Image (tube, rainbow, N blue to C red; front, side):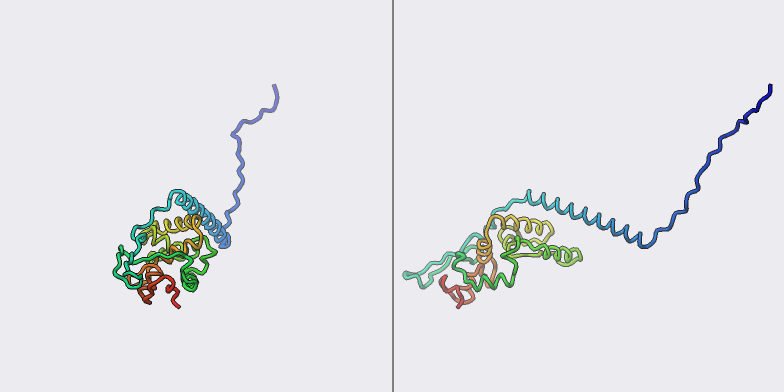
Amino acid sequence: MSGKRRADGPSVKTTRAKAPRQPRTWKARILRLVKWGLIATLAGLLLLAVGFFIAYRSIDIPDPNKDFQIQTSYVYYQGGTSEVGRFAGAQNRESIPFSEMPQTVKDAVVAAENQTFYTDSGVDPKGILRAALNNAQGDAVQGGSTITQQYVKILYLTQERSYTRNLREAVLALKLQRQQSKSQILEGYLNTIYFGRGAYGIQAAAKTWFGKEDRKSTRLN
């Protein structure tokens, strides 16, 4: 019996040689760093936005500080010109309506404290970012305050300096902006802030600093 016998043997596996890995260039490394930096930045901004939204929904406007609600009572002799005495709380204050406040005082305070008061949303993002950078560098904790933020800090919060209080200040300023007009906020601010020598608000300041005894004379003319 004749025939060709096929030789049995182990199968031979062929492998392809891998191309040598090219070293990453400095341009590729920079692009990779930029890409991951952008991803990290976007993720951080998203977390901040979610955190601020949660804080906005959970923080309510509290009751005003009691010391800033009490006004000074004046007692005069018959005729209403000579003062007999006064009854004051913790602060010397006499609130007056917005219409009786001198326009020059309103304009001066806005120009000095918050030039964008009539157009902003109650908070200053640039000021907040600047304050956050200063705080991160180890400087004293501070806020990027608008007039609305200052009013909120005085009327509703404490003088504590912390990131938590700054967050509450910004949230409350945004909420107050939605509930009150600019005139109402400025009126409350000018009736609340401290002018020195124990005087709170422009009416008490006018009497303390200039000896003005009636509301009309608050016009400092």
